[in-house]
Length: 251
Length: 262
Ligand SMILES: Nc1ncnc2c1ncn2[C@@H]1O[C@H](COP(=O)(O)OP(=O)(O)OP(=O)(O)O)[C@@H](O)[C@H]1O
Ligand SMILES: [Mg+2]
Image 1 (tube, each protein chain N blue to C red):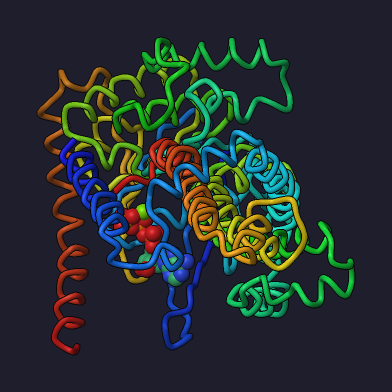
Image 2: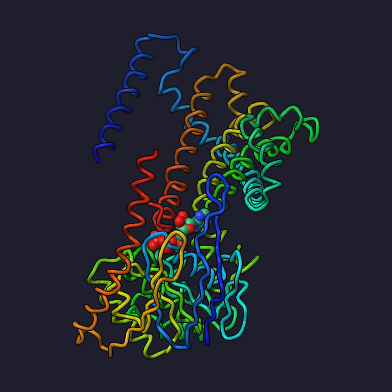
């Protein structure tokens, strides 16, 4: 409760400063529009449904991109976790690629797929894949040898051992990997849309910027941030917490 | 003999990659249905020996036969209970106990079998709990039920009650004794508690350390329930104490040496 009160006071102060500052013209509205104009831009966007179409378009791309990146990431992670040779070769490459912001792939993606949805989805996939792969790999490597030994004395070997023990034992890392993959994919998607074609939140943001509509720009930024935070806090952190508890990883 | 351990040696490499003897010339025969404790100071190789019998660790030389068959890998004929319960946290108590039964039984039969053994350890009411919702003693009982449920000929137990408090431990001793009398499994029970080994076993194999060797093989000929024969138990305890003291002194002086040289 304490934190909630602190937060409310903090946000109220920011909002008050923003609105009062704008009204007293501490800064020009073209440089930073007032809260009320941002708010009405948002209302207008939702009323004429443009923002709703943008949201749907963005989420469609994200759903496709994130799903593919989770599947590929999991498979690569399993390969790295199980094969020492793959880990020593491909693993090093994945580690390097993970530190490259996926948006830098866009020029190549545009060459390969054209300036279209495919290029944006490709960048989104790259955004999530590597972090998922690295977490999956760590998960598999960190499975307690005790679980494996216990399973072996109960007759589990090979694929059976993997699907019934090693993979489920690494679920906490799968959840963390998915959470980070979502965050990276979301950022990659917004960057991709910003530089590509619409509809989509990122596209609308650039379109508004071209017309000097900073109220819409800030409105869309708020939406992007709010979605990122809500999905992280209310979906992934909750799953992560319950998994950590169930898997006995609480300290 | 049911279990035959023949000239087993085990070496591990130390940090400088020099081989160190962990088990040296271990020979041991165990009759079917016998309850044998393996007793010895920390680090003498008890877990290693048990793990070799389980088929989880390879010998450097020598071999082990059970019922005439040489052990090369783990098998369901040997159930193992570890010091930590080693339950799978993502499975319920019931799912943990049916884990080894999935392949050979229908779901319903597996669950019936599991329930039978869970009731033997007084956990029939906890089948849908997850391991993290159970106390340490309860978890260990589930692990025992799980090992029993696959109906192994041999039960290997590595300090199964080591992490529990005295009262829980004493209650579980009673339960284990009952289970053993009912099922007549052959049990190899690793412990470093002298009183625990005297209370439970037909025979105590005392091990010494550096390298791990068998020092003594003591038959415990006290009728059960043993609580009624405190005097005889005490005599054996003193006898073993005297023997182990030398070994423990050895460990302590080595540790002192190590501490002084670093
Ligand atoms: N994988 C390993 N690699 C190297 N040395 C090992 C390994 N496993 C065990 N050892 C060594 O072998 C010796 C015996 O270990 P073991 O775990 O069998 O002892 P223990 O009798 O079970 O001891 P405790 O009562 O403390 O459990 C120890 O000195 C240990 O350091
Ligand atoms: Mg041990």
